[in-house]
Length: 113
Length: 111
Image (cartoon, rainbow over all chains, first blue to last red; front, side):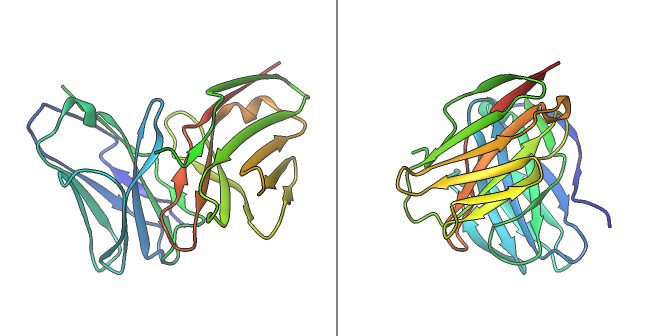
C-alpha cells in the first residue's frame, strides 16, 4: 500500500506570492492533517480535514487555508507569503477522524526569499 | 503557549546503553500520548503510544512511561543502536482534539 505522498518536495517562492501544496493520503484514509515544522518550534498543527470538512484548526493566520476533495486528497494554500513561512510542511493521514496515530508524508520544503 | 515541552534539544548516548527522552505537558485533560521518530528528509513515523489509563507501555526495545501526577512522560530505548539516531517528537491529545507536539529531541547514538 502506497504511503502518504506530498508534492512538490521542494519549492522556492518570493515574498508576496502564494503557494499550493498537495497531499495524497494512504488509500482508504479519510482524515488529513497538516503541520508546519520549523527549527525550535517542533511540529505545529495547521488544520485537519475529514470528509471534505475542516474539523480542527490550529493558531495560524487566515493566509493559511486548505481543502479536501471527495477522494480524500488535500491541498494547502498560503497566500501573501512571508519570510517566516519558510518551513517544512508535513501532511499526515489517518483512517478516521480524530488525531491519534497518523502516517506522515516526507513533506514539502518551502523556502521564501 | 507550549502545552507539550521537550526541554532537551539534543541527547548523546553510547551504543548499547539506555536512551531516555523526556516530555512534559501542562494540560491535565490530555488522555493519549505518542512518540514519533523522524529521520532527515523523511516524515515522522509512529513509534509507540500510551493512553492515560496506563502508566507503562512496552514494544520491543521501546518503553513509554507516563506519570500523570507529574504530567511527565518518558521514552526509554534499551539497548540503543546507531539506527536510533533521529529526532524524537512526543505528542499529546485530548479526545478527538488536535494532536499537540513538543519541539523534538535530537538523539545521537555514538559507536
